[in-house]
Structure formats: C-alpha cells, structure tokens
Length: 260
Image (cartoon, rainbow, N blue to C red; front, top):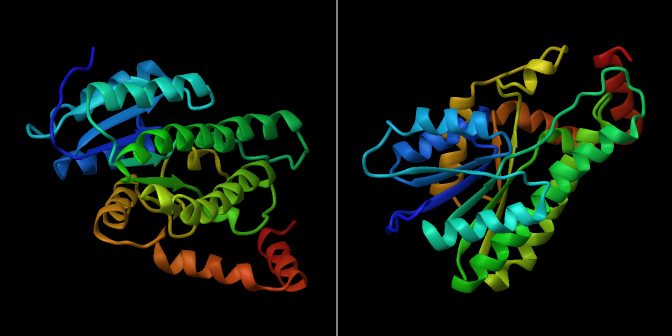
C-alpha cells in the first residue's frame, strides 16, 4: 500500500526495471526526486526497487506493476500515483518492445506486438498523464523514441515504424498540449548498452552505457527547455543529416553500408 505524501518532485518511469529506465531512476533519486518505476515483470521490478532503495534518504522509490499495453492498468497506475504519492511532474515513457527482424521476413505478428506496446501503450500513458496533468495545468511528458525512426532501415521495419510514429506524435502534441500547460519532449538515444542492443549482431558505433544516457536525460529534462534530447550528439547529427538526403542517394549509401 502506498501512502507517503510529500512535496518532493516526482517522476514516473515506465520500463524502469532495467537499462535506460533503471539508470535514469537512479540518477533522479540521487538528485533528490521521488521516483516511481513500473514494468510488466513484477519479479524484475521488485529486484530493481530493492537496488534503488538504498540510494537516498531524502527521496523515495516506489514500484507499481504496469503493462502499458493494457489501458486499464495504465489508468489505474497513474491514479494510484497521484492519489497515494503525489502529482506527477515528469512522465518518462521509456517502456518498449524490441524485436530485430534479422531474416527480413514480413511477419505481421511482430508488427502487431510492437504496435501494441510501443505505439498504443505509449498513447495510453499519454492519455492518462494528460487527464491528470491538465488539472494543475502543469507537467512534462517525455517520450523515448529512437533515431531508427528518422528514416527506414533494413530489418527495422516494425521497430522503426513505431519509433517514427512516436517522433511524429511528440511533434504534434507539442502544439496540442500547450493549452493544458503540459510540455512534450522526445528523447532519441543512440546505441545504449542494454538487453535490447545485446540482440543486435551488427556493429554499433558510439555505443554508450545506460549511466551515460541517464545523465543526458536528466540534463535534458531538468536543465534545458529543448524539445528533442539526443545523445551522443555527433553520431545523432550524422543520422539527422541522413533525413535530408534524396532517396536515390540514401538507398545507395545504406545498401553499401549494410551490404544488403
């Protein structure tokens, strides 16, 4: 049962039991924030909470099992946080499914799973946060996407489609949520050491640690007003440049680089 009420700022992190989510939870706890982590895997969530509990005496960590692909669970989670802990200052929507299509086969089931979690799940979180944050006309929603969403890449059809959708959603809601006093940000990390990137078999240039990502996310969310948070900067600027290339040149370069 959650029952502690206080005035410290609170961040809710989906997918907070491992990887970027866990490292970011650790960073915000060290900075004196109350942190609520959620994940659909209760065992992993409990382990993560135990690791985080000894970090700070001033701030507190809470864990709530939540499968973001289940709309009712998301709604109940946000209501539980706001009624039993505090209002949510930042919602960090980090949870995602990842399934690299190494065979390049078109598998509709793979698309459906990633749509349910990465797109629909994130939308459920946005809906629940918006309904709570607009009451106080204050709050920040940060959507973790990926530079894979910048342009289409081999073997990344399903994952890239969902991440491209999240970037577009963030850009649109940046305008739409102003009237509610809610700020929207999008986070596009490069390659970060995690269970997801461990599935990749291709070279991953400029790969960084989850701790590195957490530092950049904290600075981007708390210390700046930038809409897009990117890291590592040099690598992401190269990928951004690829967005303006004409298709003929883009397809040629990607074919040469990947050997496909």
